[in-house]
Amino acid sequence: AGTGLPLPRFVSLHADKVNVRTGPGVRYPVDWVLLRKGMPVEIVSEFENWRKIRDWQGTEGWVHQSMLTGARTAVVLNETHALRRSRDATAPVIARVERGVIGRLLSCEGIWCRLDVAGFKGWIPRGDIWGVQPGEKIE
Figure 1 (spheres, rainbow, N blue to C red):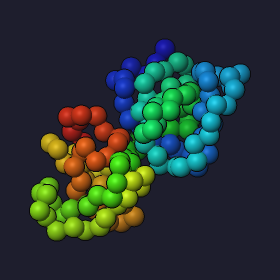
Figure 2: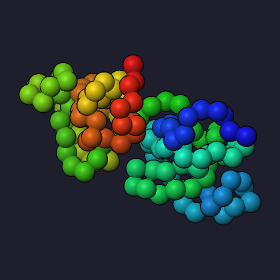
Figure 3: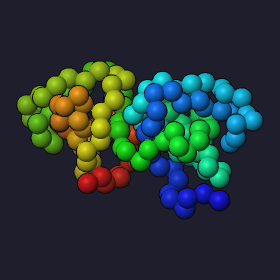
Figure 4: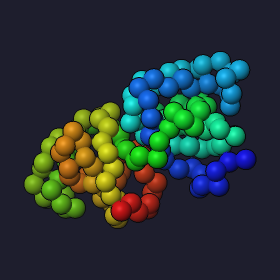
């Protein structure tokens, strides 16, 4: 039995070292290890206390629910992008964020999401980050 929460959904890693297994249980071998606390992952399936996750690079595997948190984060895709003061492509740039940088997801509205990256809070187009569903509103 799962949680009854919608699938897929985004969460983030709760620990600095998370074993990702080939199946839902400790008897399954560790396939790889995630080493970035706060990294967003997408839950694609549930089995008892185990969650099948997918990371931003498409890798999938099973982790125990205790290794995940509902805190929302996003990772910057592709290249360096500007964090802007407002939801406007011409707004002043607050900071530049590089591919792979993780920020706390503060809100998403329309095509824009607001991120907190190391204390810099600004807006970035939804398509430049991974960790939010298309059209998902976050307040």
